Image 1 (tube, rainbow, N blue to C red):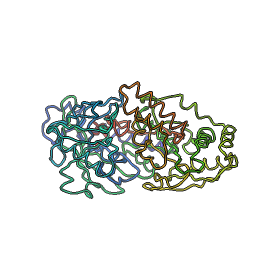
Image 2: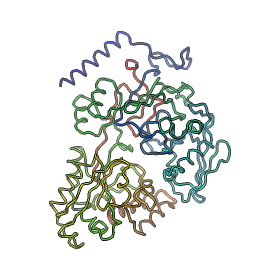
Image 3: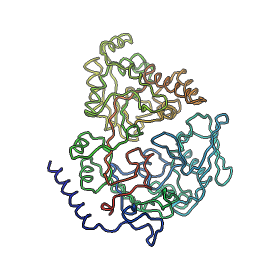
Image 4: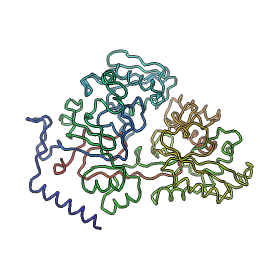
Amino acid sequence: MKRFLAVLLALAMVFALAACGAPNNNAAPNGGNNNNAAPEKESKYGGTFVAAVATSPGCLFYPYQYASVSTYVYPAVETLRLRNPQTGKYEPNLCESWETDLENHTLTMKIRKGVKFHDGSDLNAEVVKWNFEKIMEYGNGSVIQSPTNIEVLDEYTLKVTFPNFDLNQESFTYSVLIYSKKAFEEHGLDWCINNCVGTGPFVLKENVPDSHLLFERFDNYWKKDAEGNQLPYLDAYKIQVIPDASAQMTAFSNNEIHRFPCSDMQISESMYKLGYKNKAQIGEANSAIVYGVYVNNTKEGDPWSNPLVRQALLLHGIDWKAVAFVAGGNTAFEIMTPLIETGDGYDASLMDASKYDVAKAKEMLKEAGYENGFKTKILKLDYGTKAATEIQSQLKTNFNIDAEIVNLVNGDDRRFDGVNEGIYLNYGYTTADFARHLRNMFSPTGTYKNVHKYSDEYVTMLQQMKDAKTIEEKCDLIKKLSYKLMVEECLFRQMYAVPNNIFIQDYVHESGLERSVDGITPETTWLDAAYRK
């Protein structure tokens, strides 16, 4: 209550100051007269936006280490295409148009003319080709579907050939970030890991580890708004590192930050009590954090190599609702697949295959020869401690299974090398594109290739999905593959989901921050005049 009153008092003071006359932060960029500017009371220009993150980036150069890079560089570095969050359709960005040829496995892209990088170099087909080649050089070819040939047809036309091609293969173009070739050639890899030079609305000026990333307005940005005014509106964009969720809440309440995502249910409840609302847009790629479990079935003679054991325990032997409550709080809920309801191939009936039934699980274990239990491991990162402890307890109580909990760290080879028997806990986000997950993660060349032995039937269906000629055919195969992976072969399943809370100040507009990183639009973000600092 005291915090609530303090927040109200602070807001009252802010509005009182505004009423007395806020400073004029409505000038057009670059100063001087701006004939295109809207009337002063409607101007959107000026101010610094501040978003909070929990950790500093390990790398800012997507070709070298693509995981989580977008979280930190989106004000400065752009993608070839954008995905419309309402329709799920792809729209032009740095790539102005494209043409797919399923028969010849090619994607031909027209790169937008007249776009400059922050260092003054030109965006063209050769630069995009160089980005693709760097991604492959550093062993990340799967994120661009491992092309077999990249050909520059003319200054702004690029033709990419793939070993296989499916209806959604070109989806990578909305997530691959395009960097300056000139900056890399002048400064080298080590510099690029901690810096980024793109075509985006803001230029990276400071990267202070464990503190912040500060981006300043790029005056030569290529986009204008619907009225023809130069973008971006903001003077600066700051990503502030605040490791503790409670500290983020305090900073938000004091108007020191404008946005923070929160998966801590206690903090979220406190925010609700202070009168703030969750602004996460339902159905988007990060509207829920999903926690899953996958099994190493490659160890011959190990209990988990037997599909009957996997089905007994992962489908019937563990009370996932209890795991969800213990690990995720009272808003968490059991889930089987990360695919959102509007995604291609979503199948609501998948959950029917997973029913908590200890008696049934015991019968299946008896049939498999493990009625007296066995010894195994549960491998997890720090976030999985509560879930692992609850699973460990249930396995021991119900089936006399002794499960040793093994703590891992990010980058630990044991997560994917297939050396340790047992089950592994992981996490991610809900997705609208499970086909991409199946290709990049659950395939003989994917992330889990060393811990999973896939059946020939599953691999054949994967290929059929890649070769599908219609959306209907592709969706049908996604459903079959999901059932095969999660029920019949039972190698992976989501345990539970926690709705992602995203808190954004009411005076922040047109940011896209209610959505995933893919939907964020820093160029059109603007703040009410009273809050422009």
